[in-house]
Image (cartoon, rainbow, N blue to C red; front, side, top):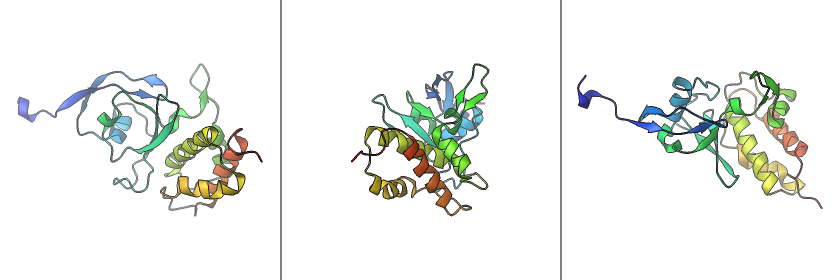
Length: 186
């Protein structure tokens, strides 16, 4: 293979689910979704539409100031995440020393209790969106009467073809209400 036939690659430094990943050369045009699947064997992040509309591919980007945001990985190159810390759906549950799930996050638990999914293909994106919302509300609580609209605003761009959204919204509402400090008092 000649030099011009090689795929241009650059080292990628990224932290995923609290762990610095091994630095390795990653093709410059590789989408983060493909990096997660092919290089890290993290397949919970889903390939849905491939054009960033359904948001099944959403991960959380954690910023140094403690804030977080959603990022679609099917349309965002892996190198966008250079030096960043991200969370995938696999990173929410608490694990024991053997790596087994010890407890689910409040969002995950509420999704299960409300049976908020059917095929579950979109669930990782909804879990990540709800987690970003809960974390934001812990920093910036919302009035109880504004909660439904706040949830709608946070989830409206996520698409599900099975559930009709009602169970997702109820689960997120209950996750917010179960998390101290998310609702303004009085």
